Image (cartoon, rainbow, N blue to C red; front, top):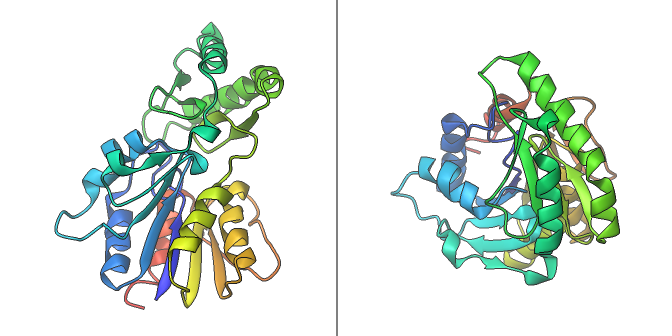
Amino acid sequence: MAFYMFDVDGVLTDENARPDQDAVNMIEQLAEDGHVISFVTGRSRGWLGDNLFPLFRSDLDWSSLYCVSEHGAIKGRGTDISSWNLDNEYVVSDEVKEQLYEVSQKDDYSGLIQWDQTKESMGTVEAVHGDPGDKEHLNKTREALRNYADDVESISKNSGNKTVVSTYGVDVIHPDLSKRIGAKWILEEISTPDDVYVFGDSSGDLVMAVTARDHGLSNITFHWVGEGDTPTEENIATEASSSPYSEGTKELLKKHIGS
């Protein structure tokens, strides 16, 4: 039995944040083969319920699926998002969220980023996606996200929070919140696996593999589907795809199907 931890944005989605049905089908095959599947993402549970879970086969039993959303503030099992638990310890105040929202409404950001109303624990903006293949718009949204992160840094810092920039968005979150929290919760729930496979597209995703190592597990591989150099850590194997986003995930998963 192997254990899989998947980030979602940029790993199971294309460059325009659209979930990839073929990647989902491959994960379904892993589940059918008896492996433990988990998602550890910055996305909200509402987004997962509306965009990712409808792609799942209804004839499969997903009760053993481990899900962590909003970096670890929300945890649960299965695809019934109403049964998941929000840890109020990690909730950013409404006052701070309002300040962050006001910054997001600047004219400079119109058509490039938007406020994410689905988030429960944090203040988030995400990219407004253009047409597939529109690199010019993609680059503009990335610049807007970087600028927004700079604009809200003082709000984040002065309120005792931190700013996290991801593939498609910027989150202002509790200072102690990271994917380590979600990964640790899952690892304490499952039996010891033979192998651990982590799929990510940002350096922050490597913490999931590091958490597994610190939990005493071995045979850990971090699968990199991001852009740039592959992040590395001692006693963690790495494997990188030739393509980013879900295309890279499918490339790497082909070696796992049926194993």
